[in-house]
Every structure is written in structure tokens, then in C-alpha cells.
Amino acid sequence: MAAPRQPSARLSGVTVPAPIHDLEALRALTALFKEPRNRETAPRTIFQRVLDILKKASHDVELACRDSSQVEHLASSLQLITECFRCLRNACIECSANQNSIRNLDTIGVAVDLILLFRELQVEQDSLLTAFRCGLQFLGNIASRNEESQSIVWVHAFPELFLTCLNHQDKKIVAYSSMILFTSLNSERMKELEENINIAISVIEAHQKQPESEWPFLIITDHFLKSPELVKAMYAKMSNSERVTLLDLVIAKIVGDEPLPKDDIPVFLSHAELIASTFVDECKTVLKLMSEDHTDDEEALAIIRLLDVLCEMTANTDLLGYLQVFPGLLERVVDLLRLIHVAGKDTTNVFSISGCMKAGDVSNMAEGFKSHLIRLIGNLCYKNKDNQDKVSELDGIPLILDSCSLDDRNPFMTQWVVYAVRNLTEDNSQNQDLIAKMEDQGLADPSLLKKMGFEVEKRGEKLILKSTSEAPPCE
Image 1 (cartoon, rainbow, N blue to C red):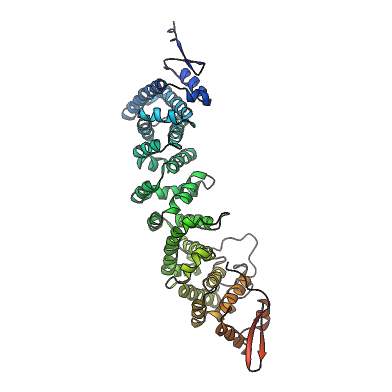
Image 2: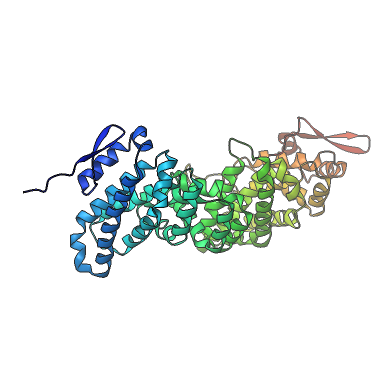
């Protein structure tokens, strides 16, 4: 004969079994906590009872971890653990009183220890994954908008739980642990990430694998990109593919629908220093793409993405001035343009002009690289006479004009050449005279200049380069 049931207790006018001692009762309580009124009137004693069940089931998991023969008896324990986590998860939804009560019972420490034990279990995958996921959801809910809970979660979870979960093969476990990390991070804890850089890199990897997941994306854009020190430390240790992912998110932040907040400008100036200095030091790596053995070189792709970031940064008026005077940047860009221009003429390679690329052909990693170099030169010379003169001294103007050819590998090449020439000649009579003399000497094609929006007019003995349209803004 079954044992008689205990008398019922009431929770906000709803009858629930008490004391809680079985799966059926836990499920009833989980359902009750879906209602705000039931959450708001829950007595602390209920959470103590749930914790007692969780601890007992956790003991069963510990035994199974030490003795593999006990694993076959874990099914009921995993069911209880899952329902305990669901119950606690629901109780914490938008209810700080329950968050505080559950936290003060040291439930967070029990939950984290149990989740870490899951790594050692060899059991039927679905039941374990469900318990694992519900445990992380509970930690996320108890930390939500509750600084004290966030602090306790961080103490117990960092770094081991994040190292375990962010690299997990289950997408939901990665997403839930990312949610916990996002919720718990603050400026002080960011410093701890610098000392555990593998966690930060794991977030980048999670975003690579799950670009549709919002939590890794938000961690990077709302936390990582606000810490120049962390970004610098990460960049030094990441793989090139991970660097490309990070740089793509830097671009997304700069060109987003909302302009960069003024408070973020000093941070992005620090990012600009890292990106510009890295480009100056390593940009010639891209020349490896001329070899058939390196047509998909990830190191070269990282350099290409650095150039893309520099183009977007110099299109931002708050960042432009800093990069216009960055030591060696303009010189290196002009030098690299000359190297790939000459290499593209001398032999057939990825930098050669192509007029017959097939639609949808994206195999050429260097696509757009040459036109972006010219775009960057144009940006760096925008209303900056020192840089205008520097490009002229480096014989960069004939080089840019000679690059104005239709090229499927460099869409909009003509437009970027026009843009660069306008910025090189604006309020600069010496550069205007140089181009006018090139036309007079047959070194610049008049029809090309006309197509670019310029014409040369002779006034007495003097040649004048005239613009036939308004100069474009910085791009």
C-alpha cells in the first residue's frame, strides 16, 4: 500500500503538496511559479525543501562519478535535478525577493558544483543535457538584474564553468552560459578576463560557430570592445580566423545604425592604434597571396580585414584626425599600393586586373583590396595638406591615376580613384599643377580625367586642373 500523502500547504491560494518530496510535487510547484502572484508570495521554506532535494540528488551524481556502476541508477536523480532547476528558474523570474532567498541558502554554489560534475558523467545524452541546460537557465535567472546574485555567481562560476560551457558541443549550453557571462560582467570583472584570456577567446569562437546567437555578440560588442586592454591581449593570442571575426564586429560597431557614442571614442582611438600599428608592421604579408600556395592564407585575410577597419575608421570624423597623423601609416599604404600594382602588371596573380570574373566568384580573398588602399589614401588626405603633399612626394598621384581601370576584382575602382584625386587636389595648387602637367605631357589620359570629373584648361602659359563637379565628402 502506498504511503499516505502529507497534508497540503497553500501558496497564494493555490493548493500545493508539502513537504516537497517527489517529482510530481516539484512539477506542480514549477507550474505554479509561472504566475507572478505565486512567485511573489512564496515562503523561504519552499526553497529550502527544493534545495534539500537538489543536494540529495547531487550526492547520487557524486557517487556515480566515483563509481561507474552507479550510473545506471541515475535516471530518477537526473529527473529530480532537472525539475529542481526548473522550479528555481521559474521562481527567480522578475522576483528579487526569491532571488535573494534562494541565493542566501547557498543554492548557487550547489548548482555550479553540480553542473561541473556533469562533465564527468557517462549517461544517456538527452537527460544529462536537459539537466545541464536547466541548471544554466537557473543561474542566468537568479543573476538577472541582481548585483548581489551576479557577484555570487561570478565567485562560483569563474573561470571553470565558463571554460567548460563556452566550448561545449551543445548550442544551448553555449548560449545559456554566454547569457550568464554577459549578465555578470562589469568593469572590475573585465580585468579578471584579461588574466583568463582563453574565456574571452572562447566567446569569439562561440560567435563564429553561432553568429545568430545574441549573447556572444552582445558580450563582444557591449563589453569586450569597451576594453582596449582586453582587445589588445586577445588579439595577440587569437588565431587569424578569430581575429577576422573580431575585426568584423569592430566594423559592425562603427558602421551601425547608431553613431559611436562620445564616451566610446577614446576606446576606439585605442583600438585604432592597435589596428594601425599592426597594419603598418604586417601589411606586406598580403603579398603571399600572389603565390598559388597561399591563395587562402588566413594571415593575409586578417591583414585585408585590418584595411577594411581602417577604411571605416577614417570615415568617422572622430577617429580620422588621429589616423591621419599615425606614424608611417600613409607611407606604408602608398608603398603597398605600388607593390601590388607593379606585381599585378608583371605577372598574372590575384592583384592583376580582371575583366571576366564569373558571377558569384568569391574565391579571390584579395577582392577589393587595391580599391580599398586607394580609398584609405583618399580618407587620409581629406582636408589635410601635409598628407596631400606626402602622397605627391611619394609619387603616389601617378600611381593612383594609373590604377583607374575597370577591374572585376576591385569594384568601384574608378569612383575611389576620383574620390582620392579630389581629396589630393582640394586647396592644393601643387598637386593640381602636377596632374595638369601630366596631361600636357601625355602621362595622363584626358578622356580618363574627364571621366573622373576633371579637365585641364590652359590659361596663357599656365595649366589649370578644373573640377567639373562638387568634391565628395570623406567616405
